[in-house]
Image (tube, rainbow, N blue to C red; front, top):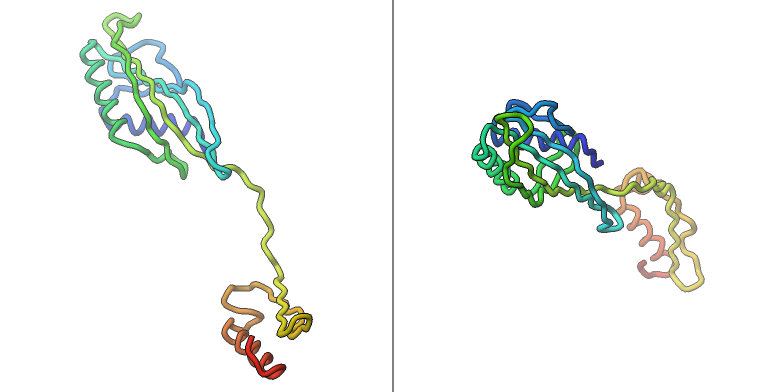
Length: 193
């Protein structure tokens, strides 16, 4: 099941492998901007049905990097962009699914309100797919067989089979069961099944 907090944590872990950050903020900007910090924020999503079995969720994440100079912002943003473009899918942390990484567009660096700190903003397009919930359907408990040798004439009446396993029918293997049926058919009319 798609969970935004797990996805943010996944992005923080994955982007943290590209470089060392002093701190990675999750879902909010720092109260005071400091160089070499990263912020990852969820911006929104939309969903679309793809098949009867699953649907796709398109998400947008904002990635903000803070640095001491504009050049440092550009250099780190380029590293982040390359890392995102290198992977098509990444496993979602503490979940069974994957996140597909799409486009990553970045802004030009700008000066923040904090003296000596610049920032660059990137927007990451990502996708996750989620299976729909289906109510469990009860399994078959009894199978009835009716085999006729001639139209309108019953040869074998209501054989009940409890499906303990596919290999056995009431403790008899399928080959033994078939052999018994053929024997009865030969005795009844001299023919096979």
